Image (cartoon, rainbow, N blue to C red):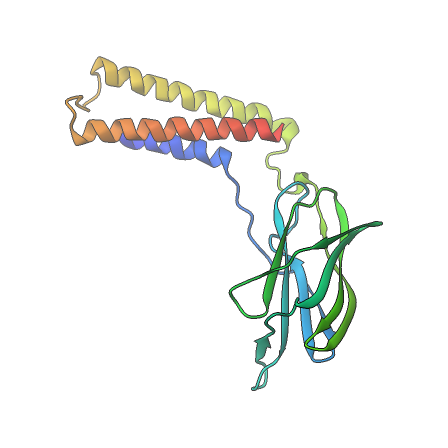
Length: 212
């Protein structure tokens, strides 16, 4: 039981140090002659200061109704510029293994509306479009609990986890538990569990510091 308890503590602490951002697809699509150009963020909602990708999907109608074909080498003669207010930046666009899909890594540094300006040509077809993409949000949209009330709770939870690990270590040393220290599998597993818990708590503390 003590091994299970140690690992559970580690997993709980680890949850404090990581987050999950589920991708959605609120992208904007425009038509340029026979081409469909879709632009958006790789992770939505986009959050200021968090690494993201501007993603592109460039297709044309397929041979059967409702199907489409991805356009390869679409950015060979096409320039992509991200626009925020009066500030612009020409970006490098990387190809995805899937035909017609492209991406450009970016860390948005300000909240608000970003635009993607595409100029050039695709297979000889002139392209000159400005496409709005979803507004970048502040980190508050993902914060939970709110920082004003959650910081002390996180610290208290981590203190409790650390205290529990210290108690388990003392029990192992004093022989109060049923785990033997003769080098057997159970003892090794217990030590491994303690290592996981300790590492998770360290990651959680680092995460808390970064959120301050």
